[in-house]
Image (cartoon, rainbow, N blue to C red; front, side, top):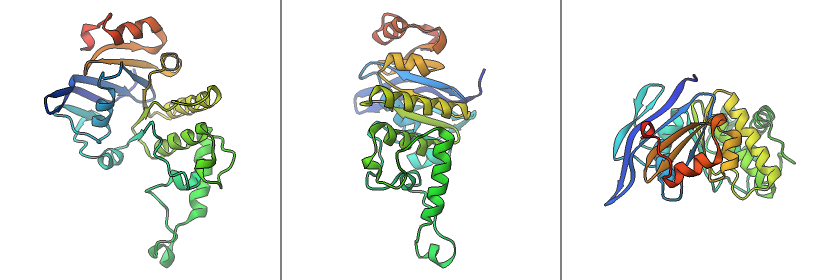
Amino acid sequence: MSELLLDAVDLTKHYGSVEALRGASFQARAGEVTALIGDNGAGKSTLVKCLSGAEQPTSGKILLDGTEVHLDSPTTARRLGIETVYQDLAVAPELDPAANLFLGREIHRKGILGKLGMLDKAEMRRQAVEEFQRLGVTLQSTDVPIGSLSGGQRQSVAVARSVVWASKVVFMDEPTAALGVVQRERVLDVIKKVRDKGIAVVLISHNMPEVLSVADRVEVLRLGKRVARFTGSDTKLEDLVAAMTGALVQEEAA
């Protein structure tokens, strides 16, 4: 069995009188794609926010590599090797792919020019091309604003940016939403390459066939709590639907 990297135990999250999470647990392992699924309002977004530092749980604990951690901000999560690809991409459309890859982590030129704030654009472009090739990301051009690229290419850059900087876990929130068939397959191929690097990939998706095609494991949330866990290769679509709707509950997963 793969190494357990991320282990969330009995997380709760209250917004006033509203309970978004009611003792939710979740696990992600190295070199695997774990899908997190559930109907609208199941608590998926809240759980991901807690596990990526955007929100803090009201109670429960989060362990990374077996050590309890307190993710008090996305910056803390990133420092610990946890990155997130959001559904809205969060790319800078006016910048080229290399600049987006190094956004917030720019390389400065050496010497006095670097101290004056000048960027080493050539080195960033060289490293970006190398990383894109390693991940199998094909771009029509690396010298144009990313806003002029196709949706699949923009999403691939967003995925690559998180992967380059992640050492432990990458959360991918609906990474293929609004993409065409060819573009979707391209992003899924990148996800598989990320998994093969030994990183734990967490895929949040409403697309059940997509989940079954790429996930090694599936965890199901319902009403703020994990209600079922499946091994991807042994799972049928009707099993996922039944767990999401409450027709199937694996008590040991609760």
